[in-house]
Image (cartoon, rainbow, N blue to C red; front, side, top):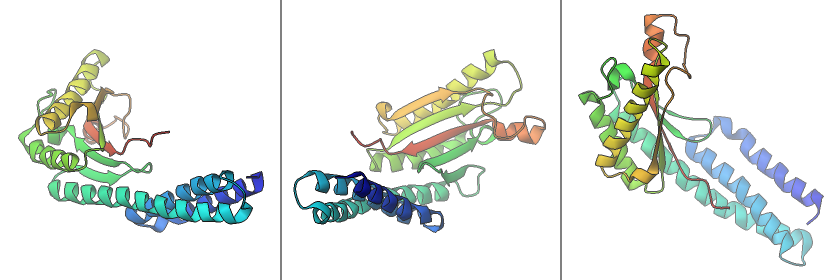
Length: 221
């Protein structure tokens, strides 16, 4: 398949995904899946044998349809997880959002999840993690990343281990609720990634947090 055909397929993907800003998460997943499927299908169709543009177009159409289904499935699943977590965190300071790279993010302020200077879970955090664990058990391919953060009060020798222990305790709780340990990764970042300047009491409270990200594994190459 010549460079012109490949370029046309890439342009189609760009056009399909350019309008994603005003779409729901499910629509975004469908559009992006369709675009990627169109490129792959077109390439396969063009390589498979004679037939030129017709074979390429057929391959692109089939690929787009398959890709749209795959994208829609993950988008819908993620939306359902997000809604469930929003219900579980209603009335708390825990924030549930969708990231630009299509992950589900749960931001737990340390003042909600942990006592000052301690790594054991506050009782109020447990029902939230229970709901997340249930969602993860129902979506067995999803992976979880847990990151602990602190403000800049104290030294790195204190903040690093504290942030790591908080992340590990969250992971251990999820594991105790049925989430396989090999699906969870943890890290403690101390005070290295503040959300806002550590210049007021209120801002330091914002920076003390645990962040959880739920994502699907990268497709096999």
